[in-house]
Amino acid sequence: MKSDDATRLIRFFAVLFAVCAIAYLAILIRSVLFPFVLGFTLAYILNPLVKYFELRGFRRDRVVAAIYVGALAALAYAATTSAVYLGDHASTIRESVPAYWQQSKEFLMGFRHTVEVAVPQLKQPLEALSEQMSHLAMSGLSHMPSFAKGLFSILTLLFLVPFISFFALLEGPALLNFLIRICPSRHVENMVSLVCRIDGAMGNYIRGMALDATIIGLLSLIGLWAIGMDYALEIALVAGVSGLIPYVGPVVGAILGSAAALYQFQTWQPVVQVLALFAAARFIDDWVLQPVILENAVELHPLLILMAIFCGAEMIGFAGIIFAVPIACVIKVFIEVFWEWYNAGRRDYQSVFKKAAEIPIV
Image (tube, rainbow, N blue to C red; front, side, top):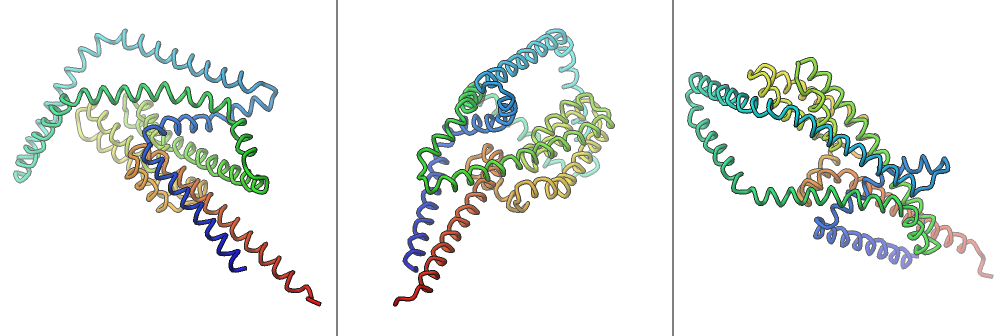
């Protein structure tokens, strides 16, 4: 019995070592895997919509094609509308931007003079900060080639991700059937259970984050409208979409909203109101929405979620921030399932030996 337990432990740690090795390899080639991860994620999000029409008698390939045709039509309409709007207002934009820029410079210079008169000790730090900002602006011009390279990478992603997700949507059931066929028959039930539990965890996470982002966006929209912001809907939309990353939405909204308020009103009072609005949104997100929605959805402690985000950012950068919590959910499911399998195997062996011990020798 002890030898059987030792064998199972060795197998468990061998599987764990293999998973860690695969994860390390994935980190090394993360730039190659990133578009595939995004593509499969998009396919996973769209898959319930495809299933909805499949259950009503529509062929899968036609449903996927219709979704992509509709998405392309919507993008074409948005691009055409934006181009027409910019064309109609191009002269107004060219005339207003220099005036706003000059007003912003005069406002900042006046604010700096007021601070220096009120607190003379801040004169040198403000001068140093001004020099650093000028240096950053000049160095930004020298990095234009790298910016162009990054823009090309983004455009490549915009092409690759829909392409990958298209084939992932088409071949998703075939891929699952292939995994079932190559899996040993004694492990098929366990593998299907694992896939179902991962699917449930990911579905709960996506629904929880969508609800959280929607609430943050609506709160931001109501507050910005009350302040009188011109671009309230756009700023609230950005805050809501960035809210799909845990703890990020209100911060992005505060930065964008305060800059827009300073640009529009040329005074600090609306800026303070915008910052107070998103500080309240952050408080609600941290102490109400995250514990109630996200923690219950993924069954992870908020500290574990925060640690996962920091670890993801340290290992693979911005992509790690986006995928940290889903990966943590999958790892949690793997650990739970493998531990259940291990304990179930131990109980089976113990019951066999117990029954064998009850059989008389003679």
